[in-house]
Length: 221
Image (tube, rainbow, N blue to C red):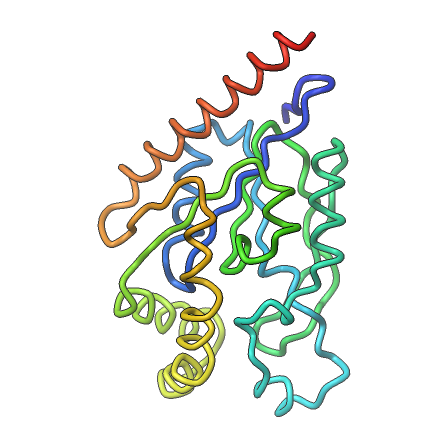
């Protein structure tokens, strides 16, 4: 498992966009294109606040698509640790019960760390911690279709409950927080079609950013 060269911090790449925009699919395609041995993956979704103290009905009624839903201090501490060359152990979060259930496997500071999440580009402190921000844009119809498939197959939800949540919180939060954040991205991609061409574009941008950073460091040495 290669680590960044001595003195060279990982390149932290944020992949943002609405729920169902294709962030996970792009992250996996990018890892394959850039060499999986050189890429680590981190999901902002792991850092949802632990809601164990609330009754199940109260947990289900919360809005999980707004900035306050996340444990930003822990997330930022882990970004700082990765940049410093230390591995981190993200929380393991259960989306069915909205509780933390321990910690996930360690994420090592490989040369490239791909970080995905709907609200990555909304927080100025997180944006400052990233080296590159990518935003995925997808039509609402497609995002909703993907969300229904994911939540019914992986999270035991009904189609009716997914639609109700989408109308009540997901759509308003997307309009207020997610969509405007694309203006702060370094690269905006439309994911209505095949993911492979987009992965090629993003991989070229990441490779170029790595090369320019290395050249700058050589010149400054």
